[in-house]
Amino acid sequence: MRVLVITGAGVSAESGISTFRGKDGYWRNLDPTKLATPKAFARNPDLVWDWYRERRQRIRKAQPNPAHQAIANLALQADEFLLVTQNVDDLHLRAGLAAEKMVQIHGDIFMTRCSRCDFRRSEHEHEDGDLPKCPQCSALMRPGVVWFGEQLDAVKIGIVENFMRGGDSDLVIVAGTSALFGYIIDWALRARGQAGQLIEVNPEETWLSQFAAKSFREPAGVALPRLVNELLSNVNRRAPTY
Ligand code: OAD
Image 1 (cartoon, protein in one colour):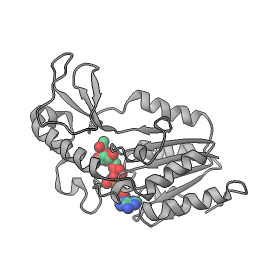
Image 2: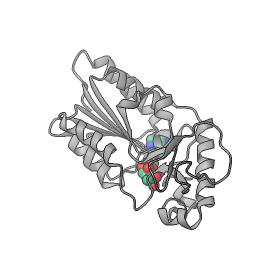
Image 3: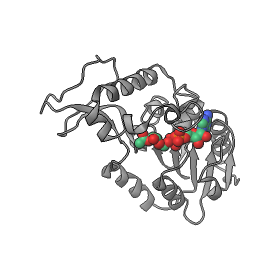
Image 4: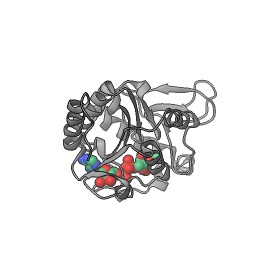
């Protein structure tokens, strides 16, 4: 079985990490142009770093939930598997998903990288509150995430495209994302190809719902373990259709 899974903030919601556009989502109360753009960082790096450090702390304390575990389990059993996650947290990894089976298309919140040169370091442990400066070139360091108005990482796009070139996926699961970005819908539809199944997991309707063979209107932590169990118990027989 060849499987592509695409996840968004909703998959980490049950671990206590806020979504962006849902109820209590970050962008309901905070202005993204003040926190998540290169301009915002140039204007007020302290404010931007404070917000990212607070999010890092919250993620450090959070635990993977049954949705992350179900996806890691599916990855182990599928013949070919790729997860494209928009989440910058590390909960998919901590649930046991192999790093080479996933792409964090919007970056990694624990990566701190130089805003000028190639220097980068991973900061999973506690950090102090000073503005980080690059040890190589002294420029300001920034969080290793994709901000509004920035390009996606070409290497990461290459990994996704390479998976697409390997053939149509039997199953495409899109979970916990409002699917507002065109590339998310594009990858989901192209991966499904002519014969694959596209399944959505989201309590709410999204742009993707119209294309899905089935939308489970439930929390990911409820729907994904059940779905993966069903798939795996059928894997030696015929894959279930929804
Ligand atoms: P959003 O906040 O836009 O959407 C979260 C989705 O999760 C919504 O459709 C909710 O209905 C759904 N949801 C909420 N709780 C859920 C649960 N328990 N189980 C399943 N689904 C649930 O988050 P994303 O789609 O991830 O970008 O947002 C995409 C990007 O926009 C983010 O990566 C971020 C943001 O600006 C960058 O940082 C570049």
